[in-house]
Image (cartoon, rainbow, N blue to C red):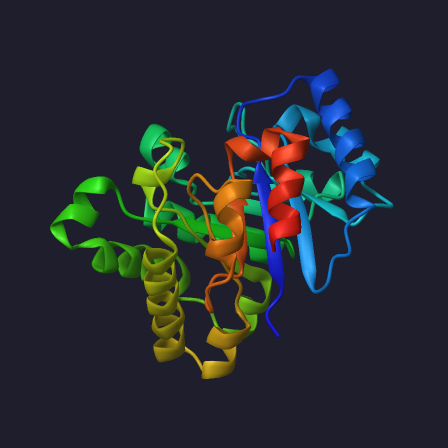
Length: 252
């Protein structure tokens, strides 16, 4: 049975004090939720990762980094290595988010190096990909997603996939209020699973969790999560509210 995952990407939000308050409230609220084969992950900013990691040490809540550099160390001002994340007990990293691709020029080739660096350091990866509106309108969305996955991940051997979670995020539905319909999400998730099955054994494709990211809210989460190949969500704005985030957790 595939693991269900609800991951909250806080992006560049929440100060140190706000992070402490939000984590504290999440820990309190999640005690009332019966989690069955479900993981809950939060991804604060770099400067608040260590505090969040310490606060959740005895909680079911896990902590992820929003990014990392592909090098072990060196003259890369402002960057964070996989080893540094491990040093503060952060074992999960989000790679390939559309905002990293769009605003910071991260390419498939660069992401392949980051994937390798994360795996070398025994980090779990939430790997993001998805099409922009123009690709969806032109009917190229399947081709774009296929290319992003193949270029960054298909050099890996099958054993590496036990450390990977996929996150499909249609760029046109991130922070816009627009959401892919549950059927559109299922169609793409089924395509992704088949794509992995064609490259690897079917047990790899059936075991990998595939999350949906794009304006998921408490009001639409249950219907989206009910689809056969949707295994949870990568949550943006709603992850900054305890009420909304816990509503999504309960929906799964």
